[in-house]
Image (cartoon, rainbow, N blue to C red):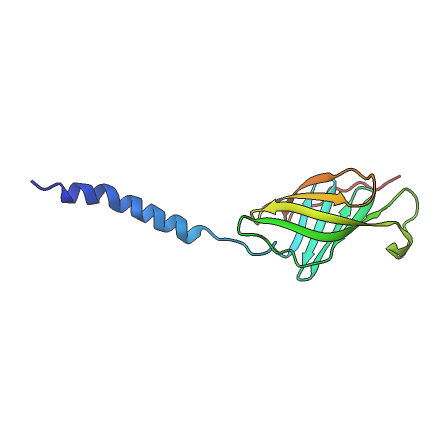
Length: 140
């Protein structure tokens, strides 16, 4: 008796699983627009960049948040140092520092690292969730 039907009985289910996985795998080309939040940071992503809020500071990414094929990003921006006391109406009165924002996302969670390029401000890394609430503490 031929083993042809037996082989196909084992192979066809595997082919079906492979096709299903290929159908559900989606490669993102940019960080999803909207709110991201986590402990000590929150970010709102738009078509042109992002606004970020930290404990005692803020930041801006000044380019669209495009991703590599692996879900990574490396983008220019600024870090705005805050401090205790009243917050000025405009952030132009606060110190601004050139920064790089690097990280990775799968569209649901994100690792975000902020590196100030010209000062002794330590690198900071945050874990954010899409649609998550920022847990940011203001300086006192």
